[in-house]
Length: 101
Image (cartoon, rainbow, N blue to C red; front, side):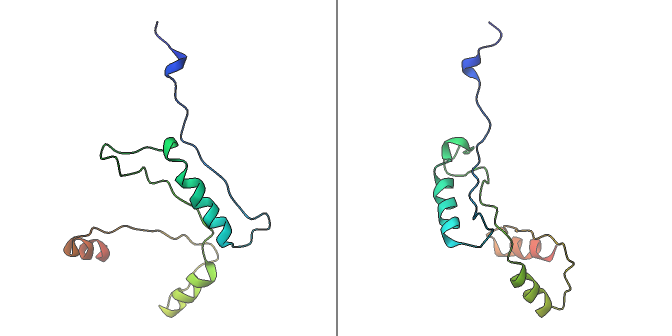
């Protein structure tokens, strides 16, 4: 037999948890973390048995906070802007070199 449907696996799962009015809420974040912790069977785990595939939470960016911080640094943010999160190496020299980029 060339094809056996019992060997098929579905894609990774996702959950959507939101406040119906779009209000920020610690309860929504706590609920999302609770749901994410129960999705382990849907995500990838590396051979070390500890490292995940990078799944996480997508949160509304704190626009007011970013605008205040940008202004303090002399930056002017456009109406639409993006934010990136970087993970630096634990080695201080490598982290410093990466931060310079």
